[in-house]
Image (cartoon, rainbow, N blue to C red; front, side):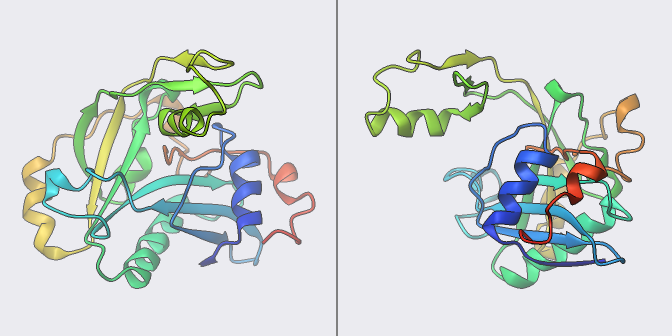
Amino acid sequence: MRLEIASYKAIKYACMNFHYAKAIPYCSVGYSVFNNKNEWCGVILFNRGSRNGGKPYNLVIGEFAELIRMALNGKQESTSKCLSLAIKCIKKDNPICKLLVSYADTGQGHNGVIYQATNWYYEGEIIPSRPFFKDSNGKMIHSRTAAKMKEQGKIKHYDDGLVRITNTNKHRYIYPLDKSLIPLCKSLSKPYPKKQAQEVNEDKRSTSSAEIGGSSPTLALNGIKNIQ
């Protein structure tokens, strides 16, 4: 199994076909995943996190990153190994990054079993302060995107063609890339939430904000050679 920097075409295809959100998030870096047969399996995406996201850990922008998407097609030998390799890549490619953060969406029935399998620290259940929106095509839109649409004059009000969706709670997980942050992570750590029945086989298929999105292997391989 190997990872390499993902192209935009690969990111777009994987997010739209392998992940339940059917949306392409902004990412700072993305990695394409290939199995031992050299078959493309999808992407794992990171971004630099929100402006104030590092404050609880005394970190600034650049010193932490958010794992925002694991869009995989199920052809990978092990999802947990994919994530472990991605962690090594982000650490190598971003040497000043000290901490990773990710979320599991309770609204999708995810408790973060993939993070538990790769020894992340569980920080607790977070109540979102911002809603999501859905456009006329049924596409989910983050509140930040909706705000930009308003700033750019594309909409005058949030209810102009958008439907407000109540955001669901998220389980937050953290992973220290810098050993100096291990004591802090341990001090914030809580017992893992119990696994849901649908998550039992998650290590073989795919979950997140990074909830891995699974899709059929047939769909995954149709016309795939030109987008890797």
